[in-house]
Length: 168
Ligand SMILES: [Zn+2]
Image (cartoon, rainbow, N blue to C red; front, side, top):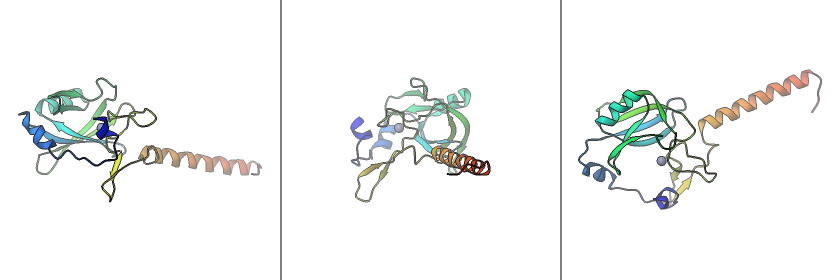
């Protein structure tokens, strides 16, 4: 599996939906999105039980189509996704969970530094059909906000220091 997850080779699993249907479980796709940054974290599946459990526990609960079992996101890693709200699409055949990640990761994979990746979407499909790794954290909205805040604070300190008679 790691070969797929850490590879730059584009090998899309075109049989995924057929395999998901094979289990005999009625499922719909669910997009899981960070309620604050709107970053898409995961796209997975829920059956009726997973949806009810998500509503009841107020954390993201999915249906693992590969393991054919309920999958409480974060149960082993601690990367729980606290539920903010559930949206339904126009045709009522998919869901959108807006969540608040309890920790800094949502994907089960880890980056070069050993940190859990926040989103499953860490590679872009290039024109030559190769995959390119997106380089976090510079691309993440929270990092950009933090960088902007740091820069604003630096500017304020600079002006204050200038007013106090310091020269640079
Ligand atoms: Zn993932």
